[in-house]
Length: 633
Image (tube, rainbow, N blue to C red):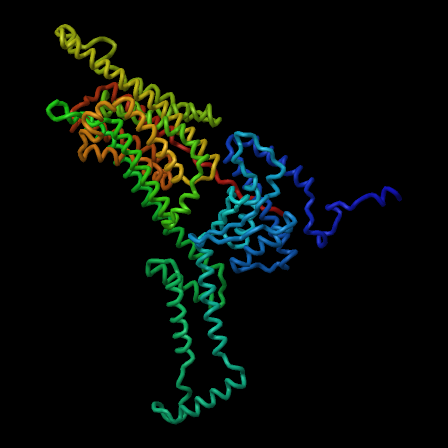
C-alpha cells in the first residue's frame, strides 16, 4: 500500500487526451543529447552537424503533424498562411515545449520571410559546446520540425535557425504560397461583393417581377420580352473585374503567365479546388526557372572563361608593355593590388546598403566587429598571394603561369584534408597525381630530351660572354617566377580552406564576408606598398604608369570573385573544370599568337593536356543514385 501511494504516474502512463502540455524534460534531455552525439559521429563540420539535426527534425515534424492535427483540429487543415503560423506558435509549441513561442514577426523587405523567435530554446540548455564549436545552434533540430510541419501542411518552405534575440527561426516560403494567399484574398473580396448584392428568395421574386413589368415599357423587344439585365453578362463583367484585380496583384510578367494564373483562379471559383491548378502552375514555373537557370549557367561559364583569360593576358601585357626607359616608370603591382581591394570594398558596401533599402543604420547592425577579426588571417594571405602572382607574371610567360597555377588544387586538397578532415576518394587522388606529373612536364626546359639535339648543341658551342650571362639571368627569372607561383598556390590553398571553415561555421552573408575580407586586405596591401615601393611612390606618385590597361587589370582582379560565385551558383564543378581548362588553352593560344612570348614544346603540350584532364577529373562528381522515399505503415 505504501509503495502504491508513493508511486507517481509517469507521462507514458497518461492518456493521450489529458496532460498533453506536459513535457518530461529529463527524458527529452537524455534522448536529445544521445541524438546529438550520434549525429556528431557522422559528420566533420559544425554546418554538417546542423544539417544532420535538421534532417532528424524533419522526421519528427512529419509524424507530429498527424498527431496534432488529430488532437487539435479534428483533421481540419488550415488554408491561410497566418492561421497556420499562429497554430505553430501556439498549440504546436505548447505540445512540444509546454509554452508558446515568444514572437512571430514578418519581414519588412521580403513578403516570403517570417521569423519565429524563441529567447531560450530548450534544446540548447542540455548541450555544453567546446570552443571550436561555439557557433553550433542545436535549434536546427526544431527548425527541421517546423519545416516539415509547414511543408506537409501544403505550405512549402525552408526553415533555418539563427542566433538573434535568443534564436530566430527564419521561415522562407516558396512564391506559390504567397501567390495563393493573394488570389484567395481577391476571391474572398469578390465573394463578399456577390454576397452583398444577393437578395433573399422572396425579395428576389418581387424584384424579378418588377424588372419584367418594367421591361414591357422599355424600348427594344416586343411584348413578352424578359428582363433587360442578362445574368450571364453580369457574371462576365464581374469576372473581368476580378481578373483585372488579380493581374495587378500577380508577380508575373508575360501574357502567357497571366492567362495561366487567371485560369487557376477560374478553376478555383468553379469549385475544382486548389490542388490540381497549383500543381500545374508549379510545374510551369519550374520549367521556366529551369530554362532560365540553364541560360544563366552557360552565360556564367562563358564569362568565367573570358574573365580568367583576360586577367592573365592583361596582367602579362601590363607588366611587359613598357620596356624602354624613355616611356617612364612601370606601374607598381602593389598599388594595383591595393586599388583592386578598394574597388571590391566599396562594391560590397553598395550591394549591402542596397539590400538594406539604403538604410545605413540597418547595414551597420549587420556588421559584427568581433566576427570580423576571424577574416583577418585569410585576408593577409590573399594580399600576399596577389603580390606573388604579379611577381610570377613578370618572370613567366602567360601559358606557363596559367598551367602551373593549377597546383592550387593540390594545396587546397592538402589543407582540406588536414584542416577540415575531408576524405578524398580514389578518383580525386588520381587526379592530383596526374596534376603533379603534368606540371612537372610543363616545367621541363624547352628543347630538353634524352639526348641533346643538334640545335641545342650548336647553341652551347656558339654561346659566349654576354649570351651566357643573359641565359643565367633568364634562368634566374624563371626560378623566381616558379617560386613565387608555388608560394601563391600554398597561400591560396590555406586562405581558401580557412575561409571555407569560417563560412561553414557561421550564418553570415557572403557579401558581408567579402566586405570584411576587403577591409583587412586594404591594410595588408597598403603595408606591402609601404615596405617595398614607398620610395618609388614618393618619387613618381601612387598612380605612376597607370593607363586604361592597368585600370582594366584592377577591375578584373576586383570582380573575379563575383564571377566565380556566379558559376558556383548556376553551374557545377564539372562545367567549372571545363571552363578553367578552356581558359588555359585560350590564354596559351593568345600568348603564342599575339604576345609572341611563348613557343609551345612537345613537353608543354603533353603536360598541359594532362593538367586539363586532371582538372576535369578532380571536379567530376558522380551522381548519387536517388533513394526511394520511406513510407511508414
